[in-house]
Length: 532
Image (cartoon, rainbow, N blue to C red):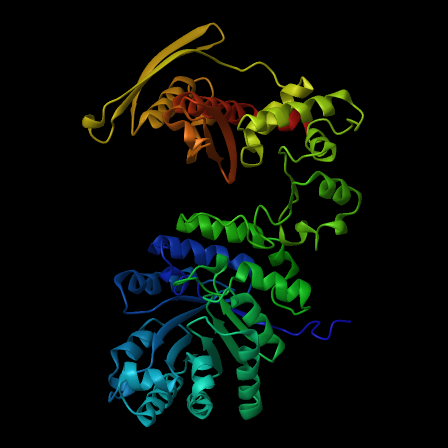
């Protein structure tokens, strides 16, 4: 039995505050409220909602968040100690924290004497007074107080006695939890272990927290070894969002602790939702989701090499460290020029479950895909186009429900924002539609015109949208004659798929990808219902 089995580790989620400090990460007030509602799926976590008084958005949030009455999420407010030579009862920072009505308040204070000397520019004794008096004042007002020992590990390396005195000041003043911070994110696991053990030996706290940044690429590892050394609370952000290189990634750390370490972090039902929640957070911030993330990324259980696929279809454990379903993810068998028959067969069986490896369509499909990839296609990033091709090779894809009879696109950079016009003529059944549309660039104009021409016949097109457009030049040495690859991502509800086009004419490649996107949008549900 795992020695850690059942040992409870609490989670303090600072995505809405520390995560929002990451470059390109932004939450509106409504985003934060949506986040608080959705975080309930993860169970009873501390959720640091922001710094009251720091900006109007956080002020508004704390006014509204308590109206939600979240039954599980424990809302925490974040701030600092009072200022140098300031009494806590006169501190606007502390009074704003109290006014937030948050039952849990987290304040940070300096535990590295370098910061006391060079940043606060005060004495070591005054800094300890700031910690002691601030914590004591907040506790006297009936709040649960957590203390972040900012730069604890750097301070401990240079002046261990003073770093420990800073933690002692907070605990003696009534803080229910001290959090040891690797604020610069540059410590090694051994340094984290040494610092945690020193605090455990000096104070024997029942609860101790860890807050680390990822500047050395070790935030998750450092959090894990801290838990192994006695920490009972981990702090981090979903998808590792945060200032500079980010914070400890809860999307990785939670399943790592629970599935590998044997700790009790979240419920089993919450663990099954961790992939969808991680992707929800990325969507909420409009940030690109990192497909390479362990556990929750689209590539986490993706297999490309033919030999690997053949092995994993015989025994999952051969090339997967766990069942992807355990974290709500799924296995993906990628199709490329490296694919063997096992890859192709797995994909074909999505639409014809009884097809055998000896079926001539398997070999025919593999040859066709490898030929297309040799010419510039890349199907692992364009699963919509891949599925259309697979269905055609199986003889199962019906004729396109529409025909593009003609299209023309004009661009004039001097026209302003809507600088392009597309004219398309399409035929659906016996009816023809001729329409023109403006757009922000030729591809946007063409996309808009095609959708306007077809949405009356296929209303589902009004619910889908183009969410990403990527162009890659495949042979730059040919200059403007180079072949380009266009990949378009389309979203319908919570599903996103890619389609592809390849040509030395960028508009032709874009049109190819757009038409595949429209075809797959129209036929996906019908195909799934009849074939899967």
